[in-house]
Length: 379
Ligand SMILES: Cc1cc2nc3c(=O)[nH]c(=O)nc-3n(C[C@H](O)[C@H](O)[C@H](O)COP(=O)(O)OP(=O)(O)OC[C@H]3O[C@@H](n4cnc5c(N)ncnc54)[C@H](O)[C@@H]3O)c2cc1C
Image 1 (spheres, rainbow, N blue to C red):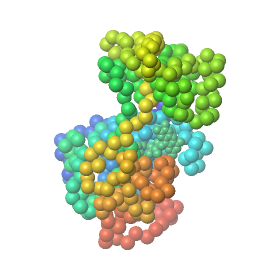
Image 2 (tube, rainbow, N blue to C red):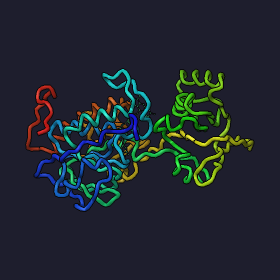
Image 3 (cartoon, rainbow, N blue to C red):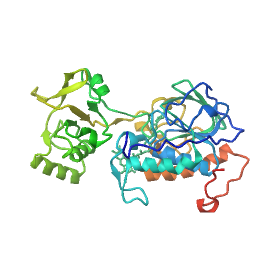
Image 4 (cartoon, rainbow, N blue to C red):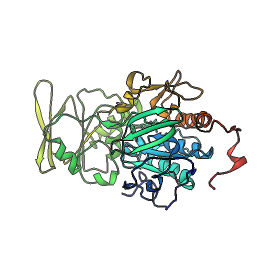
């Protein structure tokens, strides 16, 4: 797929790992995503740092690790890197990334990929890390494909966990999801050009996408169970104007009731009120924005102290979790004053990499140096 959500996986790279390390992967295993960062050559190697999660923070952590000459591997449950930026809002502009007045989320991920490209960091995509055993200096991670990865340390950059959208409980929705008629993420606006789109939800995502698709889609209905939307005041004001001039039709207070159509081809979205009033919208696309499920998943069973809402408490100075040798950064990490912002995750990646060095290379003294002093240690 074209567009800013894509990441540049087309360069061919070798794998640069210290020969004394070992990663225990089945040698027959194939990597079906960015094939050029092959992990087959890791079969007899291991890494200093296993990075669980290849969202924006995991990607920058790979850069920070390699700047300190720590070998690493990126592992992600999704088939491509970028985490929430790629999966949820690739075409949305972000305004609070330092030195970028505005950058689309997909373009940010492409830039992070370009930054680590010289290091050819190996990655295992489409794999969920399910198990962790061992201790600092000698961990073993297992994936849901049965692979094992040996790592001296573990850096969890798992964001909201192996996240997924909250799906409305509608009969037969699987077939409509499979055909793309029901979506939880807008990958490109162009794919919705000329469509009749029902958008369900009452928060920022639903309102923002309704506004963004007005003028692209043929018709837009915005369905919410209340008349009041929980979106930014400026967005709500724009929504009011779009409704007034007929670009968006509000369907309130209604909720999703059923889907109509055959073989995954959506022909109608049935909505109902709490009183039982029913109407059918002749939509051929349904975008449902009911938030993300934030479940740490298997990470919660690794013997690490966890907090409410799927977060992992860490020591702020080092980002180390309650389990020595296991660190957490980005959205998943929690400490007093934490802001779930990409820029904060970037800073945590730098601090964690320095703390990790002491465990992964206990015999080496790490002297703090600026990147301008030593350049990129790619050789
Ligand atoms: C609509 C929207 C708009 C936003 N706007 C902004 C903004 O303007 N500015 C800003 O700073 N932030 C913004 N954010 C928040 C920002 O996207 C997050 O802070 C950021 O993505 C966190 O990065 P991360 O790498 O920590 O986690 P994520 O991006 O969540 O990535 C974590 C990755 O870990 C993987 N994973 C989890 N568990 C496992 C496992 N067991 N095995 C393998 N892989 C696993 C997941 O598949 C995922 O790819 C926005 C978020 C949304 C949804």
